[in-house]
Image (cartoon, rainbow, N blue to C red; front, top):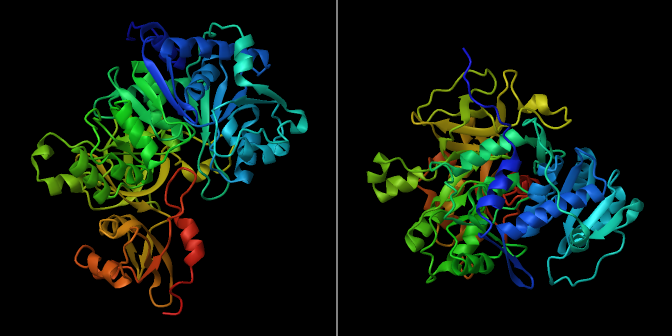
Length: 548
């Protein structure tokens, strides 16, 4: 017997229609080099429909890839919806990738047009001659920058036609969106950060984005709602801004777009001035923001989602002590759209001591509704018991989890024969389904036959009052095969010693896990998405212990 319910395609158009019809009065704020710009969802929707007309005028094919090279702005949000709602595919380009990686993904995705912020053209201009199919470049004026207002030469290489965004929009007619009957049609694509080899393309469908948006609206997830003022500091070119751009539009939440200035003072000012309720970003952002919020009115804040890399316990507790609001740790990947778990404290756990709750918040939380997860031995694929201690490779599946990479032979390496995503994370899961990440498989350190978690050591070291940042790497050791070394950034004006760092760890971790050395650095190198680049550190310091 079949159910007698209507079958309406789950498409991004529905999200747009809600914002246009119900929330036209709500505000979208963008911080630019010229100051704060304000618009409404009603004005945004009208411009987005005209942008659909621009794509027609430019002759972008029915399923053509529409690339963006831009900061978080209202214009970028117009592209977020005009491309998929018109049946095309949005392709967000990561502005922090290496030049050869950008060339690879533009050509691999067959991008037909790039919409680029003027302030970023200096990064794009040298690469224009390497783009094979690109026919159009549309320049979006994002205001004055420290680099000046001159347009670089070479943007028209290979016959690419160069346009002004506002001029195209002024000449365009608004369009009605086509009916998208196939909810599994591609809506957008995003490439991984490419820390090993070329970036890999993840293609999101209308259906997956719709369902992920609903997931982001759940109370036990990010809980996006109409009353929110959402500040996505996480870039729109990275994993769909964690779904917050779509969720804000769907719920009618006000949006605050940070533009190019992601410094601690700039982000803190937006939080205070715009009365932000939800502010999402990676740990390095919140390290810089916390001191800027001291003494400021942050009473509007209800949630600080944080992910991308492990949230140090000291950082989360710093926010709890100063703002009365600990960081909300979440976990996901480009391949998981990305929300796959969120760390809320259970009702009975709210009765635990402050220290016990702080320990729980170092986890990445319970597996999200809509996602299945398992932990297995990566060699035998045998399941690992969920006791909170036993660890193995974390694998996921679900309606917003990738099933393969776009046109890439490496798919077989990252997906199991029975359809699960191999996340590359080593994790332990407890009986409540709460995930504790042990480390990335490539960052685990095997010393004397025993595994050391770099994440655990980093969390402990960053609690040291004289430490600003720390990354732990494994390097070759003549006796132990591999040993842990701590790469440490001092707090300005402080002079901790290597001995004081090791002594601080004594009693917090097993003695055999203690770092065999400390390297003082000015800054922990970051990947294109703001994570610690431990590969860079390993390459630079691989021989550090070989004479010991």
